[in-house]
Structures are given as C-alpha cells and as structure tokens.
Length: 286
Image 1 (cartoon, rainbow, N blue to C red):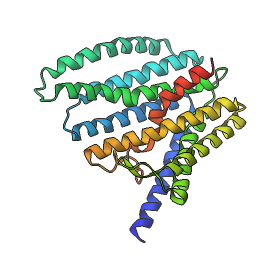
Image 2 (cartoon, rainbow, N blue to C red):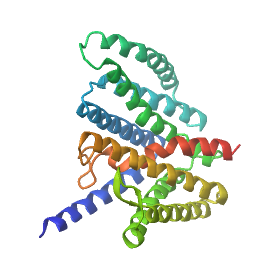
Image 3 (cartoon, rainbow, N blue to C red):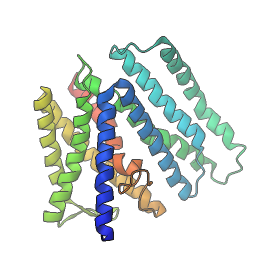
Image 4 (cartoon, helix red, strand yellow):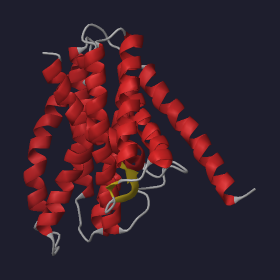
C-alpha cells in the first residue's frame, strides 16, 4: 500500500469519526454542545499560543486558557437560562463569579509580566489576550446562534447546517478551483486558492443555506444571506490561519486529528465567521 493511499485512508477514517463526534455532541443535548464548544475553544487557544511561542513570544498560557474557559462558561450559563434550559442556580452563581474573575485577569496578566523577566512583555500580554479574542470569544458566540435562528425552541440542527455551510464552501471551492482555477486569490498567503474557487464556494454555501431553510422551514432570504456572510468571512478565517502558520513556518496548527491537523486547521473558517454571522443575524432578525 502506498503512502498516499495510507494517508487518504487515515484522513477518511478520522474525518468520519470527527463528523460523528461533532454531530453527536450537537444533537445530544445543550450540555454536550457546550462541552464541544469548550473543547474547540481551549484546543484552538492552545494551538494559537504555540504559534506565539514559535514567533518568539511568551504568552501566559494558564491565564489565557482560564480566561477562555470563563468566557465560554458564562456564555453557556446565559444560553441555558435564556432558552429555558433551567440552568441550576449554582451554575448561574458560578457564571457571576467567573465574570468578576475575568475582569481581574487582564490587570493580573500585567502584574504577572513584572516577574517573568521577558524581553517582550507587550507582545506576551497581547498574544495572551488575543488567544481569548481570536478563539474563545467567537466559540462562545456560537452558543447563541441557535437562539437567533430558532428563538421559539431549541433547534440543534441550525448549528449543524451552519457547519454544513462552512464545509460546502470548502468543498465547492476545491472543486471549482481544481477544474476552473486560473486567477490566484491571495497567492502570497495561499498559492492554491483561486477566484474561481472562491466564487464556486460561495455558490455551494448559498445552495446549502437554501437547503437548510427548506428543511428547517426557515426564512430563505435570511439563511442564504447568512451562508454568504459565513462563506466570505470563512475564507478570510482560512487565510488568517495560513498567515499565522507561514509566519512561524509550520504546516499544521497541531496533530490532534490524524490527517487533518489541529483544531485551528479544522475550525479556522468557523471561528472567524461566527462574529460576522452573529452580527448579521442580530441585524436581519430584528
């Protein structure tokens, strides 16, 4: 068996397993959905801090990861309360305590830097906070997407179709790119991406948005518009992660998913698209 075939088999198997885990977590319950969001947030943060370290900085990993976990926990508690999930009183109390702790963490990171004797204190603090802003905050916002798309009842399939939109964009961009691609989209960062693939991805994403609206009996205009926003911002998400990897000369952000790289390699488009989709839905649904 050739190495290419082995790599393909490994990639296919891990892809199926990853799909099953993501699908099961989202459909399982609000708690398993929250656990999945937390896992992606912390895994993505960890990999971002590896980028920062390879760039010569020294982010405060523990403070950054703790802050990211607090952001997701607070968002989850609010989501449970808003959707009538009967969030236990201790959890709401915990969310309040974590909120206060998060406010303290930022000045605490400045104080900690005094004792680290590093030559890059500004970059250390900045990269620590950026890990939270870049990864944890968007994943926390993802918890509210189902409420915006289906305010009357908990509908986990809204999140699944959102992920399908991101994947449809990737698949159609690849297919259009390898068959029609001639004009480079962003050659300095990603030599293989083309404008033909970009527009093909948009078509695939919008088609999936239409399918989602039809299956879920949603507003077609809102879903297709959301797909367009998610696809465009998702492409930038992929380019941003490629920029990070090129800047520190690494191929993958990690190796947690065999054949697929790390958390950021798999969820970079989703992560960067969430804030734009969140704002789009706030505007379009009000």
